Image (cartoon, rainbow, N blue to C red; front, side, top):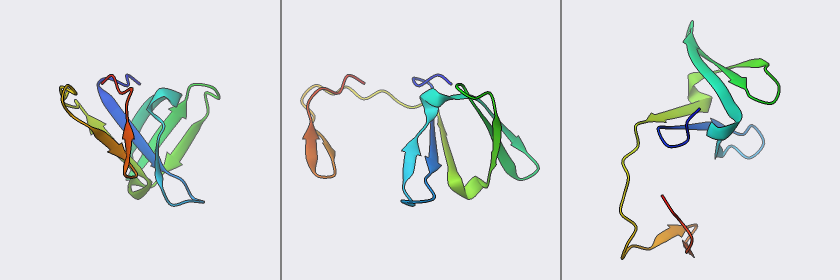
Length: 81
């Protein structure tokens, strides 16, 4: 998947947190109320409930000049996009 045009977050069963898996996914399909995801490294397809996957398309670029990005209340200094 193209990390500049799409963002795919998958919920981790252990932590219950969503994690960015965009760069690890080769395809994503909606089939019979499930989401089928094929990973690049394994070529295996996994089926997920739509509650466990968040897909964002066509993100907007934000000019980071004169802005501060905080992650968990800590500043990130080397963000490019």
